[in-house]
Image 1: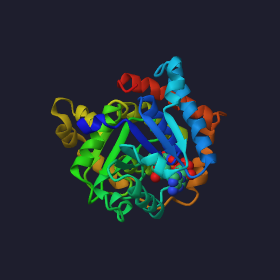
Image 2: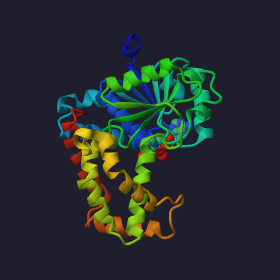
Image 3: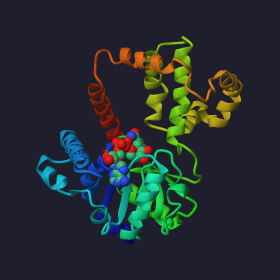
Length: 315
Ligand SMILES: NC(=O)c1ccc[n+]([C@@H]2O[C@H](COP(=O)([O-])OP(=O)(O)OC[C@H]3O[C@@H](n4cnc5c(N)ncnc54)[C@H](O)[C@@H]3O)[C@@H](O)[C@H]2O)c1
């Protein structure tokens, strides 16, 4: 915890969708942030996003209006990588999803700062390869958020082959200390954990719609008001553990196992998007939005999310 207390300045490298959202969250937690991007144009876009996110925090009473200017002032914008990283204790890298570009960035960071925790937001690249050319790979770790990181608590921590145990522990304690829900992933695998789960379910929904079993809106409604509602409060294994009554998950498998195996046998297992699926999904989503646009739907999502986060004690 001694080292943790020293995390008072963070560099967010890349100020796009994820970097700007991370910077908003860190600043809202009272941490000074140096946000670096490759041009002033991107920095301006990031500032607009961060100001919007902080105002949203005021609207939902997470921040006081009176502290808004102070919190916004915690974010320092720069195109200079050295200035951004040289004095910080944690670097949150959120640049484009490309091995070559991330490797080059890490090499450059190594010349300016050799001790900070180096955390990558990568959605699915392997840290072993990202840190391949770094002399300081033991301090590098994947810390994958779920979009938007200023609202969703999950952070997936994945170590590379050279990541030290101390780095994993420090990262875990840090994200936990600022209200995140970190999970440790012991093996590097494409897509980490949550994205794999998300796309497994998504494939089945696409298949059901493509096969005319139901509309896209109905499969989404079934998920939202059935299993999705439960998953928002407990994970799928614990929920099924309760489904077995006093006998728990063993009783559930004994009772429903053969039926479940017949469903698995019948479920989709294709590896490529079926021809025509994009068109079906676009059309289905358009219908299910009932005239609302993406920004209006995002507002609905975020308002509902806030309610759930409050129940979970995460807001
Ligand atoms: N979008 C998501 O839903 C999501 C979710 C979780 C994680 N991620 C991961 O976060 C990372 C960023 O994704 P994004 O969606 O924010 O992308 P984005 O395109 O919105 O933003 C990337 C930003 O990085 C900047 N950039 C590019 N090269 C740079 C460099 N060398 N130095 C500094 N800045 C640089 C770009 O100018 C841009 O502003 C990726 O690794 C992605 O896999 C994305």
